[in-house]
Amino acid sequence: MMILFVLEMEWVLSTGQDKHFTWHCSESGQRLGGYRTNAGACGLQFDVETRHVFVGDHSGQVTILKLEQESCSLVTTFKGHTGGVTALCWDPVQRVLFSGSSDHSIIMWDIGGRKGTAIELQGHNDKVQSLSYAHHTRQLISCGADGGIVVWNMDVERQETPEWLDSDSCQKCDQPFFWNFKQMWDSKKIGLRQHHCRKCGKAVCGKCSSKRSSIPLMGFEFEVRVCDSCHESITDEERAPTATFHDSKHNIVHVHFDATRGWLLTSGTDKVIKLWDMTPVVS
Image (cartoon, rainbow, N blue to C red; front, side, top):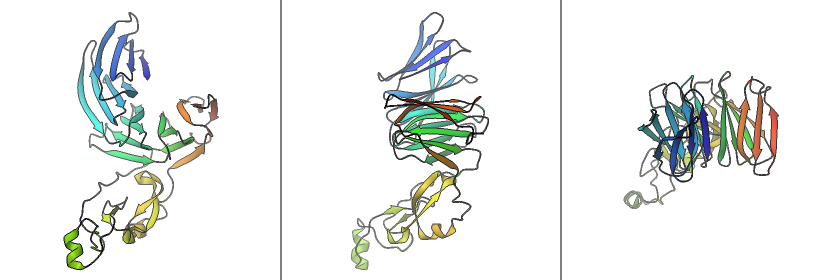
């Protein structure tokens, strides 16, 4: 599913649907080692300096391994997607890993910050198929099955999305949710459906979260549900987009970015290869 050639080590790294990650010596062809992944894997990145390999699989997990000449050890695993990981991209300078998924989202894992920060990016209406990164401008390029090419400005201070809070009643008006039989009986009120504000994470009813807003600094380039108080607090500056959107007019399965010329190459399920001049947006 994915192959990387590491010139510095003369290694060939590969992943497959057989749930195995392996690496070989490119000179001799000898198999140096392998690791069984959680599921079939199609995302693969490597950090030359630390010899860490990142493997993304269809279960939604990212596995980090430390490679030696003929052995490897498990460092840790990340699980933040609700769908399979479809693409990985590594920034060795900022030490940030990007993972795209069939759940339509991208997660930025800030490994270098050592704070466990994970930023979510929502800008596609279908699964993310491929990722590329312009190091000189700190812009992430994502392509999806929706035909969209999204150029994300990663040179801004982004915020983590909050964890969704649990409650038996609306945390704004105290109206019981439909499973809270005791409060429904005591207050003689009909239970309501639970929603969550994407900005504060509170459990709210539909009446208290009737508004929608984009929150680009939290990764929401599209309008999402927010509670009424959060909607009033979001300023026009906070609604300013941090990404640009472009329609490729084909279902993209792979992308390659040439930073020296500012060219983007996309290939699609329509058997068409397209070349894009991205210098107006990636500069």
